[in-house]
Amino acid sequence: QVQLVESGGGLVQAGGSQRLSCAASGLTFSSYTMAWFRQAPGKEREFVAAISWIRASTNYADSVKGRFTISRDNAKNTMYLRMNSLKPEDTAIYYCAASYRGTVVPGAEAETYAFWGQGTQVTVSS
Image: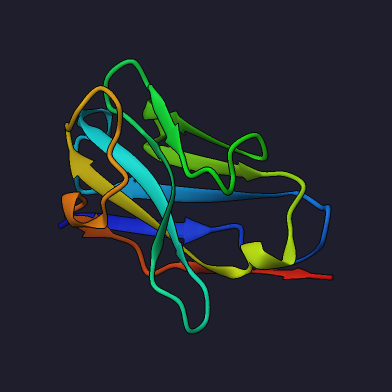
């Protein structure tokens, strides 16, 4: 049974930093493209960042490019999202997602990700 468990969320001031983690189990982690999505109150879920299973190539939403960094540690079956220069508009529930293999440039479409975590709340105060 595949499980994705996010952690690291919480309250942070604008301009601050935070690191999210996604611990995966029940799958061959190194064979999966991993991604972060987020959903703010009253808004649809949106793509944040993804990292592919091959060459660890990355893809970012324009809104977080230059501020967020996605990474993975295959030995620990864990993916990370380092978030710097946080803004109030980054406030959302952050979800990790997994897709078996996939393209060299990891996709941004939620439909391509078969497995999802329960989410972790990130709140950025102004």
